[in-house]
Length: 391
Image (cartoon, rainbow, N blue to C red):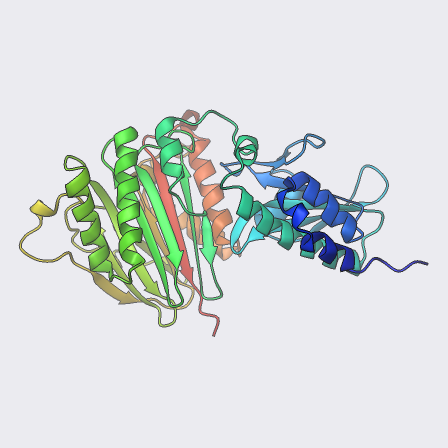
């Protein structure tokens, strides 16, 4: 009986500067071999999270809703199965922090504790490689798209952050549809050492100028946020940017900041639907309903006062939903409008089953897309964050 290889070959491979320019498929092969694994294949989720697409042409795409690989993706859990050929396949989730990238298939003659440990290590390594390369590798983009993308959507998506971010205390996740033809909807979220910042925007119209309006608003938010500005200053920075560069444009939105150490939530509502609060598996009606200020870019409509910032304290386990009106005005398969109550009820039912937040939004947005001839009345964006302090 021979001992399984140690990690030394992998260390040598990673330490060699010549390997930095290898394409990912070659890197997967070399890393798997260095760890003593028989074969490995990376599958990435398509942009709408319906399929898992292999990075090589040697394997077919797999449906996320109806495959073991999809089960691994949906639950972020290991799955093992007997392969068609001799041996077994272990499916490992590919995660960049809280963001679901896809899955890794590790083929072996037999599953052992050591092969599973090395498979997990390989998945963690490859997730970092994918995240570092996908921003500039068009080959990744081509494989994860199933239709041509319209120019406004191409521009706006370049500004969007990962769908999901989080740490031990808070997770924030978002979806945006129609994926290939969005107009003015956008979202943003980010983490500091103490806070989660979250934004949902809805610009006037559904064209390139709408996308440009949201892009400028996102940039203005980030510009102020990265100087340590408070929430009111963030909104005022958007007002100033739109007034200066796009004086005929405006956008509605909700900008929020959660101190995840204390649970104190601040938000400003600029002509947008009020956020929803779900607590103890119930919708707390009108918990965050406040009189809205005018949309951003229309500062002249505001009386002689500053933008208003509201505040409340969350309880552990609370979920907050920011959304655009395209969500509640969409129709379900029975022909009825989704509406606020059904929207909240869907999230409550999913969370009661222990479903992770990104999966809840994925299934919800698909239920809207797959009804009424798979068409939404308007862009539909949902951002949900959950505060669950680790202590």
